[in-house]
Structures are given as C-alpha cells and as structure tokens.
Image 1 (cartoon, rainbow, N blue to C red):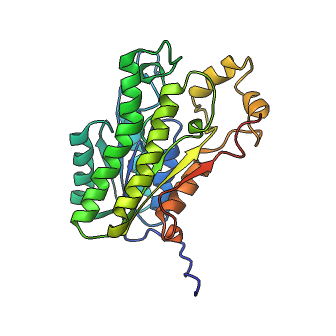
Image 2: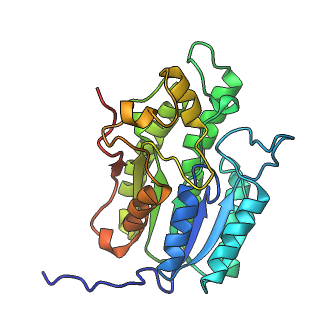
Length: 288
C-alpha cells in the first residue's frame, strides 16, 4: 500500500471543539493550539469558575473566564477562527449548546477532544472510606459522565451531518496505579476508558473514531503548576521537585504538549486505523 502524503497542516479546513480547554494542567490549551497550528478553527470550552480571594480555584476541573478568552485570542492571532463557550461537562444542555455554537459559528464539527474533569477535594480527592457521597458523585459526573456527554454530543452532530470524524478523551495513568487519595478519580477515568472502547464499536459504521490518551505527571512550567502534585509529594514525604526523580521512570514531569501531541495524532488522519484504544503517555510509569 502506498504511503499517505505528509501534510504540515493536517487539520486544514476542519472545525474542532475542545472541552476542558483552559483548565490545569493545560493539556487542553496545548491541544487547541496544536489543532490551530495544523489549520483547524477551534471552539474552546470549559467550566468557568471565579477564583477565591487568594486567586485559587476549587479544583482542577475548571478555569477562569480570562484564561479561556486568552486562549481564544492566541488562536485568532495565529490566523484561525476561535469561539469561547462556558459549559460544565456534566450538564447535557450546556454540552450540546457548546457543540451547536461551534457548528453555528465555525462550521461542521469533525474533531472533538474532551480534556475535562480533574481532581480536588470537592470532586472526590481523599480516602474512599472518608470521601463524601457528594464529592464522589461529582468525581463521577465530571470525569466519567462528562466524557460520555461530550463524546455523545459531538458524535450526534457528526452522524446527523453524515460526516466522519474523530473524538479523543483524556484519561489518566491513575487507572493503572497512582498515589493515595485518588480512588474516585481513578475509578471514573477507568469507566471513561470503557466508554471510549464501546463508543468506538458503535460509531465505526459512521466513520467516527474514538480513542483516549492516558497521561502521567503533567506539570506545566512558566509559573504554573499542577496542584495535584503538591499533595502527592507531601504524601510521599518529599518535595514537588524531587518527587518525579523518586517516583517516575522518566525521572521528570512531562510538559502539557507531550500529551497534547498524542491526542492530536489520534485526531489526525495519520491515526486512521487506530480506534477504541487508550494510549499511555506516561514516560514508563511509576517506579516499583
């Protein structure tokens, strides 16, 4: 079989919607910029929450309005179109509204990424014996139900338009193993992996692929940080800087773009025969 031609703009003429586009640890931001660099117009969507008096957000499943607008402005400065939508991924009406807005303002959506979900005390962090039922429910809503709702809304639009497409979900290496106090999160992400494989089976007949990427150790630089690692390092009795050298095979944290690159590949035609899988982006995983 002849090799497919390489394109420096693999997403030219495509419309993408990225949920969780500006939340920590900024994989969604890196992915949106990759898609725009590749020629796509992008709808950037996130759950927007105003920070407290100390400038802190309640969890990593949200961002500020300013962060989302800044991302859209960056994409427009690259010569691509971008719109902003505020949506809690566990709210079906909001999710469908965001996809509809993307189609109305940018054109038919054929690429969708859900980088939504996250960690934090209000959404399930803590011992499974101690976590409240309310926090556990929010962990499931944001990390499992949200993945299903986003993928379903995007797929429904593609099927209705009779067009093929690709969907990618951000999972987590915590589905294999991980630190303490992430039981609710890891269970929800494991469920999301099964949603991915089953949706891939159902949507293949429509020419729609569904895959996931499973990162470990995403910790952005430039003054930003992943708050999850503060707790993980403290539980391990070490510092945030020393934690990856002690715990990760790679010996370092990863940049958000290292997972975004894999997610972009899964959305591209280069991954045309990749379907229903979760790819670990974990630098070898945890040291035993």
